[in-house]
Length: 637
Image 1 (tube, helix red, strand yellow):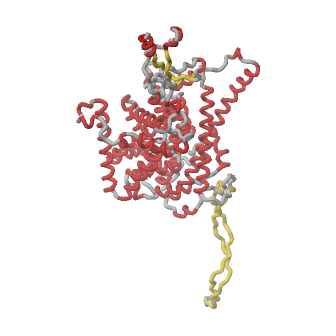
Image 2 (image 1 turned 135 degrees about the vertical axis):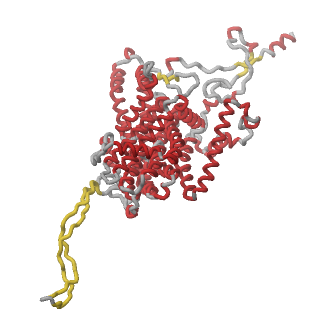
Image 3 (image 1 turned 180 degrees about the vertical axis):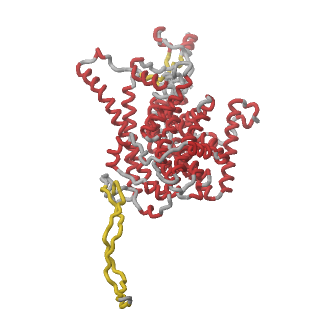
């Protein structure tokens, strides 16, 4: 009896409550991968079959079939308009500063300083097309020689990718979408930086871009075409954007040329289609007149004298937009438009992604994924990427902006419809397509410096082509920018504040710091620059050896555990930011959700002595502390 009671007491075990399995037909979308968040998504169709719908359901579905494409076109059009408004806002906020920076000819002769000025100017005006056109105009006017202008257009290549980096932040709500979108945006940055790292010192030493472009210009008899300006997409967006704001971009060019009078002028247009007309006019003025008779001077008197003179008049119609008669400053109007454009951009992106996700179901999603991401049949599969480069160049030429094109396809990467491997050649093509604007500006320059203007435009094109030849044909080189972009995407998905830090660091703080060191003197720049490069190189080499061959390293360097946590991990900074934002727990995206931290229900104790055999579906397991469970993919750790 005593032994039976003892055995009954020892029958108490711990049961694990397993998560509920969701039926397959209730899953709206399922990731077509095991654990790789970068793989394309497979969208499952959970809509009700047609034969099961009633009359109102069929009418609703047919209506949505027609309304959703119209909504996508409208939102895409509004999204492009918001990008144009945001570019005008940045021109109002920093256009004059950019023009003044381009007028510093002494600083521009320094290759690194010219590169940083190109980055800052392009970020301030939010358009590499605008910055390169200004540089081409300065070269055509004889204010800037070709060689320093090459370094500026290299910087413009880097600065143009700031727009799609900003656009990717609109998908920060969903972790995996943000990961893919930020990686798709920064693969453009990685290529541009890697190309500059190779070709900036090479150009400074050998001037190969200068010599090749000079040979091309001298070999081909290219004529000036003052009507070379082409506007394709802008013809559709201008009717809307011109009603909101019109910016006089000629002031940036005037400041770059050294015209100090342009500082006092407003960049907000008040007179449109301004023309200077020379008109003959009659002018009467008081002058000293000498009265003489028979060669004898009698007197000198002040009398009215009438004469014919040519007068230059400014002719044009008054502009009609929201800020044509405003008394606000350029900076105030720019700040208002920047907030409005960012709100409009984020709204359009969120709605666009939602509608596309509802449309990309079943066969439609499969059709899009196969056509965009599929390779050509063997043995022509290697040509797929090069065709994507051509498509990217053509689309960028049509929209006349690499920022618009890359910003449009960035959300599709976040949705999992375009892979990062396909995004990469499309952005390379965008780099080539955006050079068309500079070439057209050179063809329309119509000055005695026409050949120099065309030469700098060709240098921009040759720089991008050389970058593609280095970083795309060879597989190991092609994977380098993609791996770097994936690393940034993974880091941003884990620490979402890192996206803002990256944006400020790469496009503002780093160029500004290098520019400041350049102003301090070449010795300061060389001292800090060489030390920084040596440290970065050592870190990269040690990281490679730690992953590939750690035995060749001293035991201390086989891992980074000897360093303080804040030097080898972003977690302490993340904890500090999370605590600082603890007031905004409900809206802060930095802290994982409760359900993500504890995907399993708490275990409970069950006295198996009171259960029958039919009530014992589980085998005994050990007790698990669910407070330590932080897995996000449904597995125990």
